[in-house]
Amino acid sequence: MLQSHEFWMAQACQLARKGLYTTHPNPRVGCVLVKEAQKIGEGFHLKAGEAHAEINALNSTEVDPTGATAYVTLEPCSHQGKTGPCAEALIKAKVKTVVFGMQDPNPEVAGNGLNKLKAAGIEVIGPVLELECAQLNPGFIKRMQEGLPFVRLKMAMSLDGRTAMESGESKWITGPDARMDVQRLRAKSDAIITGIGSVLADDPSMTVRIDSQDNEVDPKTVRQPKRIVMDTALSITPESKILYPTHQVEIFSIKEEIEEEHWLTLSKKGVQVSFVDRGEDGRIDLIHVMEQLADQGINEVLVETGSELAGSFLQQGLVDEVVVYMAPKLMGSLARPLFQLPIESMDEAVDLTIQSVRQVGNDLRIVFVPLYL
Ligand code: AOF
Ligand code: ZN
Image 1 (tube, helix red, strand yellow):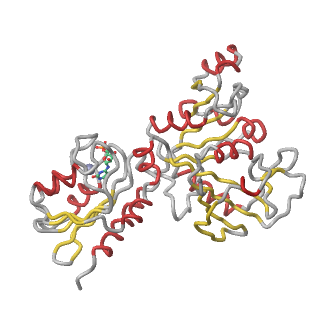
Image 2: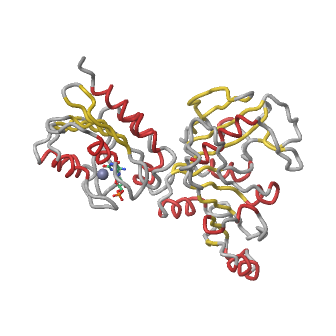
Image 3: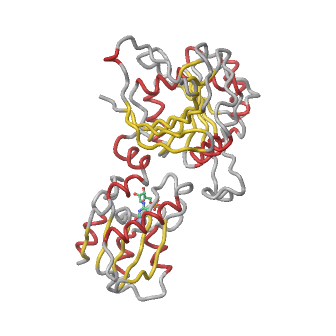
């Protein structure tokens, strides 16, 4: 039976998802080779520096790919990066048609790959399943287009919207299944951001701990995201768990607010402290920090923090997605709210839309997208 372009592209998307936890800073890309209505090869990009999806697909086939159709979730690259140009490899392999999911937002490629293919007489069809293909790489696309990472804010709250007791105590609002789900969110992030308040209150390590039985993430290939602390006055103690191992951590502070001696102590331990200006609210300029992270090749960040810093991220229009785990628990009116937002009237309210809802163990996982005006 002759299958549609969408059918094969959906398979290519499925393959691309195999790189969900490993391709950073590269995009997740999948490729299927079809000849005479049969799949003759498939591949995906696993890791930066290693072969791209198209090359893996071409290497996987035992059939001559001459005259085949290549389905690729992202425009084949045209440049010499860490690996050679895929457009040229497809031309050399004599494929007849290339069906692409979306154009590559990387300015080094941006249509050049498609033009190269067309110039070689290859039929180019697309975009096909563009939305699905784009959803594979929200961070890569945002970083390329806006110079900012995709920001996912994770929060755990009670039914009455509380995130910590008045004392700061917050262990544990949600159950073990929700907490395992958070580990997967961490695993697909390039960096995890928290605030000094959370570090001092909970002394979290913010590392990824994947169960050896996990059916989604392979604990063998899991990488540890960079850990970032927003710490205006550099009050972090050298013993804080989040600082170890030190090569994967960066603290952002404001130079005028810190004690030089403390900075020296931390530097001697190998902790990287970076200074940024004040934002409009007099605190760390979060937009500047996000720009710096994008420059480092960070595609997706997970913000796990208290209601104050979370409120600042939201108010500055930096949040792309809010993942809320809601526990069937009441924490009472003295407990802390989801966001500190000094809002007085309904017209100042922040609107969000619901993207998905599902039950995780005994909790609800609700994904929201803020509607910034
Ligand atoms: C493709 N297929 O599977 C991927 C592509 O440094 P390199 O050589 O790995 O190149 C990275 C860039 O290549 C990346 O920024 C993006 O534009 C493209 N990724 N292209 O044809 C793939 N992963
Ligand atoms: Zn390539």
